[in-house]
Amino acid sequence: MAEIRLKGVRKTFGKVVAVQDVDLTVHDREFVVLLGPSGCGKTTLLRCIAGLEQVDKGRVFIGEQDVTDLPPRRRQIAMVFQNYAVFPHLTVFEYIAFGLRMQRKPDSEIEKRVKAAAELLHIEELLKRYPAQLSGGQRQRVAVARAIAVQPQVLLMDEPLSNL
Image 1: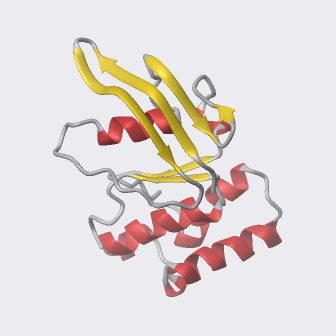
Image 2 (image 1 turned 90 degrees about the vertical axis):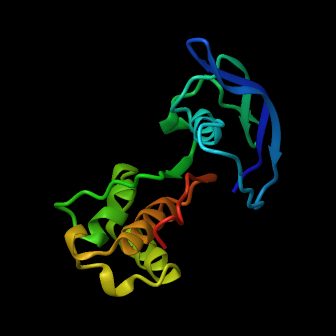
């Protein structure tokens, strides 16, 4: 994992200030939870870090690199969303492997990483199932496994445990 630094990050939507001048450092391997009421900007801040929202002001650093103007695919970030999407036509194995296939990893590496992520989250017995055969908590663990499998520099989670 890598350090995340935010310097004066601001994000507005029209006249609504969603994130106001945030300075924050999350150290390497540190686990940080953002707490606040609904609508206070927690998800927007995560989306700014991930590059899914462009900041209006300020800078975002991952490690030593200023990623403020980089697209999400170049930030080496994985994100687990509050409303996780599991493709209905893919097995759990195929879903976890999806990001690795996009990275063009060899099949042997994909097999190894998928099994390691499944073992970590205790979902090995689910690898051949389809989403319709899973509970909400199982689907959420599958989404976390997919994020972990790509071994990102930063793992962002937006309410990832709400169904567990």
